[in-house]
Every structure is written in C-alpha cells, then in structure tokens.
Image (cartoon, rainbow, N blue to C red; front, side, top):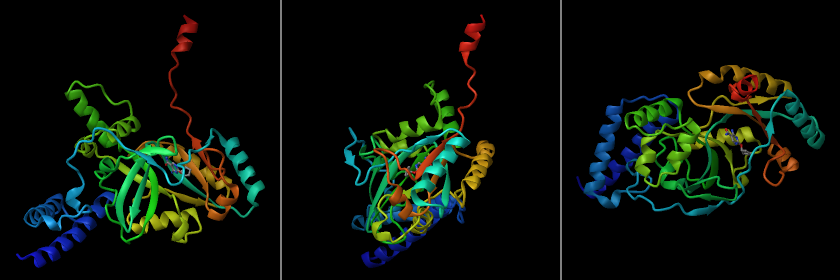
Amino acid sequence: MDQQAAEKRVQELHVQLNQLNYEYHVLDQPTASDAEYDQLLRELINLEETFPQLKSPDSPTQRVGGAVLDMFEKVQHQSPMLSLGNAFGEQDLLDFDRRVRQAVGDQISYVCELKIDGLAVSLRYENGLFIQGATRGDGTIGEDITSNLRTIKSIPLRLNKPVSIEARGEVFMPRKSFEALNALKTERGEELAANPRNAAAGSLRQLDPKIAASRNLDIFLYNIADVGETGVTSHSAGLDLLESLGFKTNKERRKCASIEEVISYVNEWTEQRPNLPYDIDGIVIKVDSLAQQEELGTTAKSPRWAIAYKFPAEEVVTTLKSIELS
Ligand SMILES: NC(=O)c1cnc(OC2CCCC2)nc1N
C-alpha cells in the first residue's frame, strides 16, 4: 500500500473507530463487537507503525500515553469553576425560588440535573481537538490531568465540529468499576477504596496514565464555560449543543416550569437513586435562561442562579448514643 492509499485508509479508520467508540461509551448502544473494534484498531496501529507520519494526537490509538509524569502542571481556569450552595430540605428550595423570583420576576424555568458524586473537571478544545483537561482545584487554579482524561473513552479526542470550546463536567467511577477495583485490591491485600468518589479522585491523581486507563472512569458534561460565540441562550440549549458535539451528558435532566415540579423531581430521584449505576449525592437546580443567570450573578464562589439539593446522609449508626446509654 502506498502512502496516499495509507492516508485514505487511516482517515476511514479514524471515522469508523470514533463512531464505534461514541456508540459504545457515550450512547451506551454498541453496534459492533469488541472483536470488530479491536480488529480495526489493530489495522490502524499497524498502519501508524508502517507510516509514522500518519499518527496524529487525536488518533484512537493515542488514548493511553506512554510517559509517566513526575508531577502535574498548574492550570489557571479562564473563568472560575464555581461551587454550589446547598439546600437541605424543601423550605430551602422554596427560599431559593423566592430569591430568584424577587430578582428576575416570575417568568422562570429551571433545569434539574442529577448531582454526580465525582470530581469536577474542565475540558478545553481548540478547532475540535481536545487540548487540555484540568481539575477544579480551588476554582481558579487546577492541575493539568490531560493525559489521564484522554484515557476516559467517553471523552472525545476530536469533536463532531471544529469548534473551540471549554466544557465542564464530573468525572466519576461507575459502581461496577468500583466493585472491580476493590475486588482487585482485596486480591492484592491492598487497602480498599472507601467509595467511588474517592476512587475516582485517586485514579485521576495517578502520574502514570496506564493506571488511570485501568480504572474505567466515566464523565458527564454539564456546563459550557464560555457560551460567548456559541449563540446559545439557555442552559438546556447548551447541554443539547454539548451532546451534538459528541459529549456525554446525563439524560435524566429535566426542565421544570415551577419549584413544585423541581420538588417532585427531587422526590422521584430520592427514591430511584439506588437503581442508578453510579453514585449521586443530590440534585442540581439551575435557572435555565442565561440572561437571567447573568442578572442573578454569583457570590464570591457560588452562582445565585443554581443550588444543590443534598440528599440526607445515609443513616449513620451513631456510636455516641451507645456510649451515653452505657
Ligand atoms: N456534580 C454535578 O453533577 C454538577 C456539578 N456542578 C454543576 O454545575 C456547576 C456549574 C455552575 C455551578 C456548578 N452541575 C452539575 N450537574
């Protein structure tokens, strides 16, 4: 095969492998077997070995880098990664709704999202290529964990359109991956991970991307950091845009026309929570209109246009009582 034919075949394989990866890891609806995927990947690896100049950073063969880092570089976020204020009960939600209405009037709609119990990260793309990924850190300065994020198969290395965008989301460890990790740790006589969130944090802190790759992490994107040039005017349209670009978003989100609808969504998921294949620690409620978000603004570290309803902590058997009784 000459170089020109190889170039054409490499491009075809990129398209096919990215599509199969997207169906499997983002849509969770694979249309090919693992064997078919591996065969195409093997063909691409061989072509890249024969024609090294055809190997590109966004190639499906380049997910797990070779180099083990000796530290993570610091990254300054272009816009702060805000943290959420908390609501612990229905009254807190009614108070939030009252404050919002006082500020922007009664024409409001909210977007409710499951609050994924993981790590907040920011993903930066230039002309459709994944350039850099960072942890939230203190909200202003995070750590560059690009090489670990590249190993997460639901993170696209190239978007469906050559846009420059910064998307933010939550990296998490699905319960199945968590159980597999602790089974492995038990075999090795290692200390078990306490919960999926800590296990995800520990995985993203690995300096060797091969270890991060072995942890089967996943991600849901939930925010566009700089909607500027995208032209979207609502949070829900922003999530639809992220989806159209090839990002994985959480399909359980729901637009609510009133705080009463928000409360019924909260009650529904308080019940359904144990049936999810990942941990959630609450529900995030956001004002949908970006103009109203702008009007409401933010405090030093939290938006006034969003709040996190936190589920009550699992009933912990407090040993204190037993001490009092004895
Ligand atoms: N853990 C989550 O699932 C989650 C976290 N954060 C946000 O929103 C950010 C963006 C604006 C304030 C917080 N949404 C979420 N769904």
